[in-house]
Image (cartoon, helix red, strand yellow):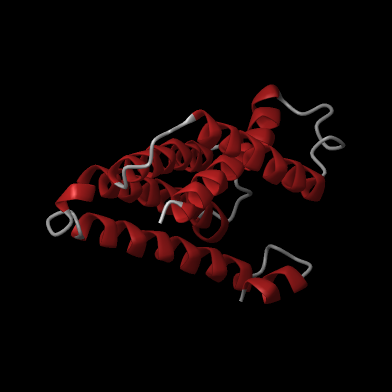
Length: 169
């Protein structure tokens, strides 16, 4: 489905909106599952709470985006209310990963921190090249410029935390 979406030149089609709606539903399901495991996975309770809150924040942002496009029929403001919830997703998930690493008895050593920084830097460079961030920033409001960098940097950090978590097993 994602591949078909990228082949579609217009991102204002019903197909695009339905894709984003279903994407938001995936995060709702992830949040429900996170919260439902609280009683049965008590050692990971804090991790599940942060993951559940992160998934909830992301789904709220997706549904705000859908509201603007489908119900209000207007362009989504950028930055806007959805961005607040998308930005909340990153620290919530980051803390979730850190508590998971703590539960798995992985020490945050200097080498782990260096690995996070290097991996984040490489991923950010790839994302910024793909997104052409350097060429598109002139004349934009400061908050917009901040968000244009904050999203790929935050994605890069979460990817690095994911890699460390997977390697710890």
